[in-house]
Length: 259
Image 1 (cartoon, rainbow, N blue to C red):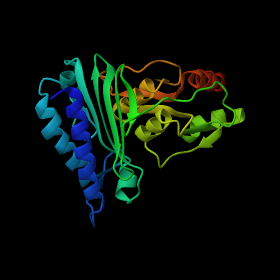
Image 2 (cartoon, one colour):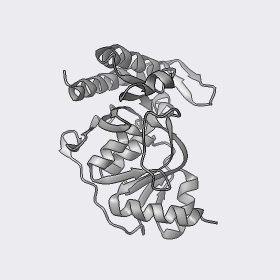
Image 3 (cartoon, one colour):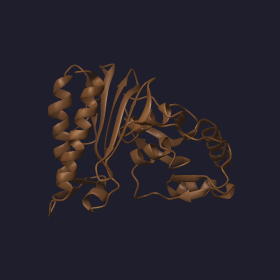
Image 4 (cartoon, rainbow, N blue to C red):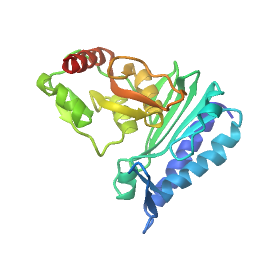
């Protein structure tokens, strides 16, 4: 089975598993030392990825939010699977719709395959390097312009506050996980997504490829591109949009941050 067929099959299966568990009464859940939530659904989906995807590609590297990381072993591989069993665990736990399963394959630090599945909406976003991005089979292409006036931009409050004087339509999407913000940018539902601070690789890799293959750009807040499979599995901030609007957002954010 090809990498793409394997990834897409497992992500869909994982989403269906999560959908069933999300309807379970008295779902077991815990709080991690960092204050974030984890449920038996996160762990069950992670186990499925381990059993299906990792077992099929034992020679590849592995990075998952719910698997203890071994940077030395991980970085020894050019190929890395980057998994977020459930992005939006709080929504999953509370019975809301805005959660997803996300996974990507990165080669030499860059994503080449991606899938983001939202079971409650039955929306399956996929992308392959050089082959475009689709939503349920329909090609995605980001509408793009340089103006930020009235642009629907999602992000954390710190980033949005610095853009407020430019007349954006701010969307403090605390309930929308990062992978879905990126998927919605790729689908043209959001004009952009911004965030200041460290963001984990598993929250970004799949969504980044969706945006890139839909004609957009993704970077840190200073415009630097992402490189995955480093010792510290996180990136410094997020700016995602169509190419022209991305440049305008980078300029605006850096002007606002200049003393």
